[in-house]
Length: 251
Ligand SMILES: NC(=O)c1ccc[n+]([C@@H]2O[C@H](COP(=O)([O-])OP(=O)(O)OC[C@H]3O[C@@H](n4cnc5c(N)ncnc54)[C@H](O)[C@@H]3O)[C@@H](O)[C@H]2O)c1
Image 1 (cartoon, rainbow, N blue to C red):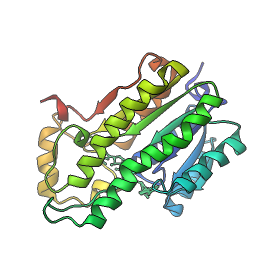
Image 2: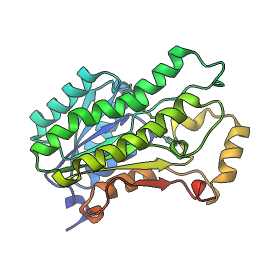
Image 3: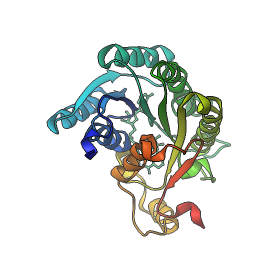
């Protein structure tokens, strides 16, 4: 079986697929033969991802999806099932952040971040899992972060939401293992994407000093891990949280 046949006949949903890690993931699933639902609030970025997939000979559909809204998530899942005949894989990856000390961050900003990063992952799994059960099984990967496992000052909403993603992932994994739905997380370290592009150099220097591999990661390196976790090669793996972090959490 060639790589392009690995996910042939399967359908994948990727959120935050209009940029960065999500775009790389959508391309990775498509390159392995899956039809891909490219979900994002950013229509321009999402449609560009679809063009990249189609240009490489793959099959994809842009779905305008706000992961913080159950209605649009359900609509995206339903459209994918209607269009491509089922749902087998999901990479729940959309994310955002807000900076501010815990004693200063506004309630609105905290809520906005938690609604996208944590409620969004719940809403995606809430609507994806029943469809995967209908398909006889499936695999989900949620994007957590090294900050699902450690503190980062000025990032309380982000850190709290990502710790929540780690807990949701383990819980769903235990709930659905016997029914053939595997649920794992990836925890990226510092990855070169539009999200990190605006970081001040001193902050980047601190983070990269911990990422002992000595460089930032590339979105494709996280995407490869997500696709592998969904593949049959990872058939025994559920409830895991794979650090894709150049050794950030190893010390
Ligand atoms: N870049 C890193 O260093 C890093 C490290 C650890 C974890 N992560 C996580 O990886 C994921 C992807 O981040 P990235 O670095 O590729 O960032 P990015 O900003 O390049 O991409 C994030 C995408 O999510 C989309 N998005 C935001 N809110 C949304 C919503 N409500 N509904 C649907 N889509 C929405 C954005 O439009 C964007 O296309 C995030 O969950 C982020 O927290 C990133």
